[in-house]
Image 1 (cartoon, rainbow, N blue to C red):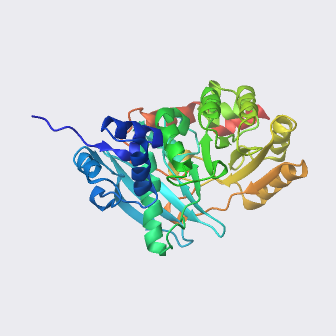
Image 2 (cartoon, helix red, strand yellow):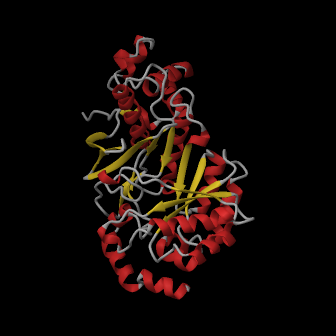
Image 3 (cartoon, helix red, strand yellow):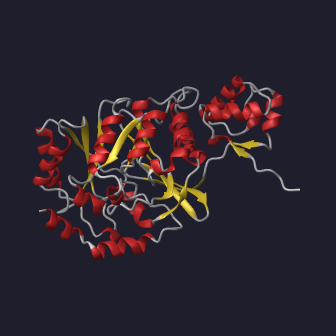
Length: 380
């Protein structure tokens, strides 16, 4: 007789956990109690959940579990950034990064083992794509990090280590929508982590239809990987642009702002030397977004890796680019590089991916066929 696999309770938001408890003959308030034990207290042992009825604890034993991805490694940067490597099975591992700041603690969470979008400047994309993570694997990164940090930092009861979550790790979150939304709802739930919608950010390369769905289902802060001021260049830096071009993307951003918890969209812009960092391109960005989409720009120093064939823009060039945007009245920040000594900076997350997409060959062929220098010359 085959035994039935235990249900991972990290896969459920509160509504899902309520339905599971009802299937066991239990009422909603029991699901709330259980939800609090799991997420607020970080408890995985049902026997230790002292105010749950013994009958419920008995039902849960063997039928359910609280299981985050297994930890493979932990690395701490000189600047305090922490990177964890988690085993998600099948030879795949994903990375999660904690960034301590004076006013908050930010966790960068992965949504896929690899990424199918294939942006030219992203180490994850060069590894290819294996599979989507489950809700439990997404939430499990926060569950593990929050309670490990509370213990390490010896925080008093009720004080959070993490109050800001960004879905900017490995993967395109909106390509894993079914698992993403319950994970977001758990992050926001006052019976779990109680994060503000303004402090949970989904970063996307520009899946416009899914941006509209997120607006309807679970609006949180939105960041968009822009990286180019025109379709010609963006087609080559962000291949998704060939399906959803800049006009379509900006229209989706405008619609999203009708329900978003913030009154602006954050545009992420990776600064690539001689590719997208000229004064003319900064002026083109101003023309693209000014009077169309309330926004701020986050300029990201490129973190080089051998397969990219790209270089980081000099600091002076990044500053000059930022000034043009700022003088046009657009809020612009330059992201401080954190954790680059442990490969935990933006665009460096790679983990281990059993690629099913032949990404390395495709990326190499693309570089041979359309060198970035040629694109830049054609644009000019």
